[in-house]
Image (cartoon, rainbow, N blue to C red; front, side):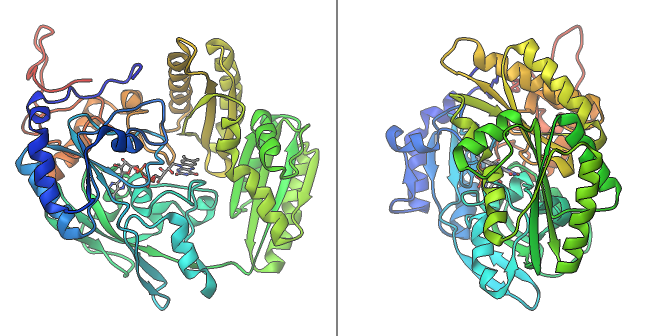
Length: 498
Ligand SMILES: Cc1cc2nc3c(=O)[nH]c(=O)nc-3n(C[C@H](O)[C@H](O)[C@H](O)COP(=O)(O)OP(=O)(O)OC[C@H]3O[C@@H](n4cnc5c(N)ncnc54)[C@H](O)[C@@H]3O)c2cc1C
């Protein structure tokens, strides 16, 4: 698994495999437990396909009571658990552990309640992101956060990763659109946080859970806010002679007080890959392309479109094409939404990075990335949520060529360090998982990390839920804050450090 180390599997747990499978089969009878290697292959990786590991066993519960009993059993028997939704994580959050139960939530696939009066929908966590919009669109509503993977990814996974998408610039990320959760803690305890109402008393536990990457509890029910579909939406394609010009245009649009429904950028390699794949009508000669969407009342959209045209021209835009029908608008977006698979056609493998920077640093970071591309000898295609400053450099490599995965990892690490250097952060929406785990020290001090682990300990003091993800070093909860290295000798040498 290249440079990313995972906690050493426990021999004691591996030796008890048959007993664990039998206990889980009692809780989830029938076809709810999978333990044959060939059948478990489907679960050995997630969207970060460079890393693979067969789990100890896969379990697919159908009821909250089953989830609670599985977790309680694992808690009492010191067995690790990795929760999984649709397995589209790009940070390796759902990567199995050899000595861990893989808990798939995909049988939780029901829309439980649609409440138009409160503009809320209650769903099970395995419902796809797009499934929520599909359930309410006939009545003129939609669920705003729209990851490009929305046709497949689950709302439970969206909660765990605090996922974003094209429309999050204006309407907020998952955390801004979730109203309530039901969760099962590692001890089997079932808790409720929030509801259809706007604010809850006490600490903001909902925000704590959103983005917790499957480390604090298993989501078993989700209440989300739905929005009324806008009266109209139009998109404009703007081609630029350089990435720097398009980056400056983004900053000027936001600086002018305009918050588009979406504002995405692609560089030349990404434009060509998407155009070859989807034929969206992108300008091939452009070095950088902006897709800007305006939504709302027609008069407002028309007014803002003309202002954006002015700003684009002032930033040397060479092509400006406004969508004239809903079909054309969807075609403009089709290329962007298919950009990842499109890049997959021009390179055997790619790593998709996910850093966020202050918008005004875009030109500097894009220039830095070009220099890094030369340094590491690998190509990079850029697709990103420009309005949010959320970058998705796709590093192209060939896993069959010795050393290329390691070079891609080093390139990715350098990009993320650059993001932090200019005042940004390690992740915008894909989470830390295993991918950015070992870079956490670039952003957080040892004290910061210990503080974050104290929260983890409050919910899972045995570190059984998704261990090996997010935190570069595990600390025994009881000792947190008191770790002291004496003459190079680490205390508690039995604690996994990876
Ligand atoms: C082509 C492609 C495009 C993408 N585009 C975007 C994008 O635009 N924006 C974006 O934000 N992401 C994007 N992603 C990443 C990914 O789709 C999201 O992170 C998504 O939220 C993962 O959901 P999932 O159901 O697949 O979760 P999984 O991959 O199964 O799991 C992800 C994490 O969530 C945890 N988890 C899953 N279900 C639960 C649960 N019920 N309770 C507790 N923890 C749980 C897992 O343990 C893991 O840590 C993209 C991925 C792909 C492959």
